[in-house]
Amino acid sequence: MPDSTLLNLQDVTVHYGVICATEKVSFSVASGEIVTLIGANGAGKSTTLRAISGLLKPSSGTITFEGENIVGETPNVIVSKGIVHAPEGRGIFLNLSIEENLDLGAWTNPDSDSVKQQLEYVFKLFPRLLERRKQNAGTLSGGEQQMLAIGRALMAKPQLLLLDEPSLGLAPQLIELIFEIICEINKRGTTVLLVEQNAHQALEIAHRGVVLETGKVVLEGPASELKKSEAVQKAYLGG
Amino acid sequence: MVEFFQHIVNGLSLGSTYALIALGYTMVFGVLQLINFAHGDVFMLGAFIGMYTAYALALHTSPSLAALMITLLAAMAGCAIIGFLIERFAYRPLRNAPRINVLITAVGVSLFLEFSGQIIFGADPKFFPQVYQPQGDWMIAGVRLNPLQVINFTISVTLMLVLQFVVFKTRLGRALRAVSFNHELASLMGIPTNRIISLTFVLGSILAGAAGVLVALSYPKIDPLMGIMPGIKAFAAAVLGGIGNITGAVIGSFILGLAEQLIVAYGAPTYRDALAFVILILILLVKPAGIMGVHRAEKV
Image (cartoon, rainbow over all chains, first blue to last red; front, side, top):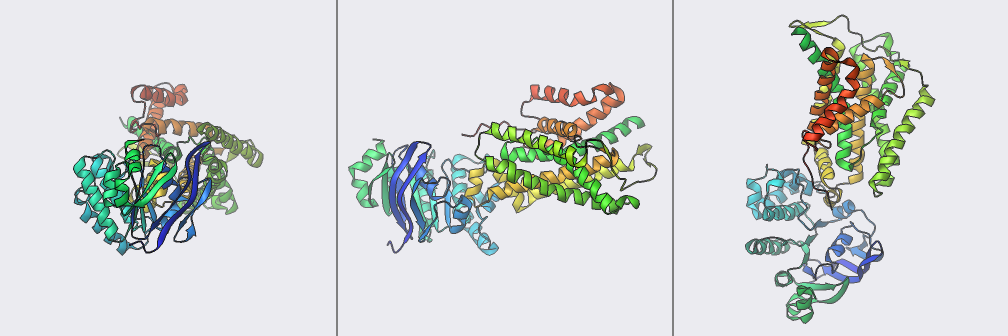
């Protein structure tokens, strides 16, 4: 299934001031995969995503996307290269309507036909958003906001989708729905890098997993193997 | 009664001028959480650019509505450039600096513009050329309307409507609102946040420049410190309406304009300049976020 490397991290170290958040993190994501980044709170999962999307600048290491080094590029340039990051805590524009949120998601997509197509696709995935498209995003429930966050990320037609804790704070049935939709998005050709604390569920849908512990990669492998691993149990339980 | 309506008309005219300035304060605050103290001085520069344009093109020799429009457009274009430069060279280098540094810089930019103005234009008041001189007064239902005030009001409201359209109906306006909600999030949409911030300064400065010419037209004595008082009052109006909120700035400005006009007419004209702050204090005691403002939790 992994046919070519889409994203590659090599020895990525990120500091917040003097505090080291990730240390020499290396892994790669192949085109068409779902890779999940798992680990306890503070393991450096979100930091890694933020480094990829350009919100943080690594103090050392390289991040290549389609063979091109993207370290030092601004987030908006990285988006235009095809990496879209749906940040933790949903991060939707509560002061804008649902439609406007989705429109902004398509900022880098110049082709209006393709935008229309993506919009239809998003409304098909999340009919709830269609019903409420004129409403202010602040009126949505937590689950609906998460749907909007994912839907909006899809509007850019990303090659690589970075999802940060999409299941956070959602009811179990909703989590299941969100995970199903991630699979569906992946089947349509979008590569997904998924950050989750919900390790078991993430490994259910992922092809491969990378386990982080206090800023370092401690384990990496096919999801089916990681599920059985002791280290995963440990990371999942916050050890 | 007729007299009362006249005061209302005057108040609306004054309020619309405050609104043009207040919008710049509120938009910049919206995207940067910065009180741009130099904004009143951009208003002053608008008046001076208008004056020099009028003299250069000899517009005052044939006063007309067209001459006014040319003066207005020149001031707006000039202030657009000035607003862009202020943001680019004074505020952008401090994007990640503590907020207090930016605030002090804003005061610095303000003083820089005021005293550069005194060096370049001279400290003594200049006469603003009469690029538009309507004859006589207009009577509508017994209310005497000063044509200048009507023109002033009409142009201001038109500009506000254009701004409203840009901010709420266009793609750029959507990006502007996104940036004012959260820079980081906006950048994750692929929005070039710095360019949107520049745009905000440019839009605000365009309106301030227009206000400079409109005020100078009614009060044709201009000097490099003329921006201080209207700047402070427009700022008070923006806070009154709920700073960061575009509609609030307009409402706050009209309240202030009307109140000032009425206190001059019926109360104590000497308190005119203090009134803005009295209203401000009263409103903030009752509703700290301002009339249209919503309390937003501090971002973490």
